[in-house]
Length: 220
Image (cartoon, rainbow, N blue to C red; front, side, top):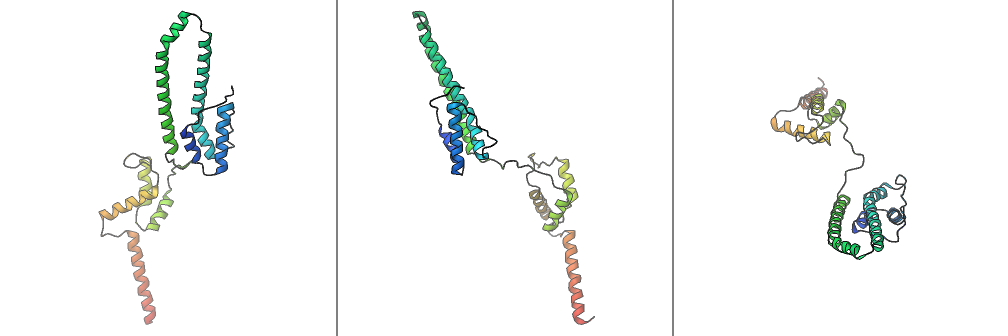
């Protein structure tokens, strides 16, 4: 790949690199970008910090487009210099408006791509590798006991397994505990005066414990 003496460093490049927190990592990102843009040296992204590798991968397509554009312009300049004769000059003069219009369209497309990439860089991203794992019946049962809501864990798991763990709006479930709390809230609205079987049992056990303590005090 031919070496270059200069390249265009866009504002979006700066914004992407400036989001890297560590100064040492930012320096690595600048080195990787400059080395690739000027010499074509491709860094080993597996050895770079994740933040640096992500920034470079986002910027690399723009660097490739800039290099192709520069090389195309150079070849175009050489062909113009080799053209001879009035007829050839006349054809080149006629083709200039079309070439300018085409160049303007290409620049507009480049700007649109630049804006899209800038939006992607500035938009918050979900945690890397985050993936929803359906809970087991025991996990749901333990959480329901912790909240004392009386929800049938087996019914909960069977229901969402049948729905392929999707919510009523069709979106994939991200937090099954939130779904449990939704069921809990719904049950409270449907039966506001009725306590769950577990709550009734705990209340009954508490009453018997109080009665036994009182009998011990009175010597019965």
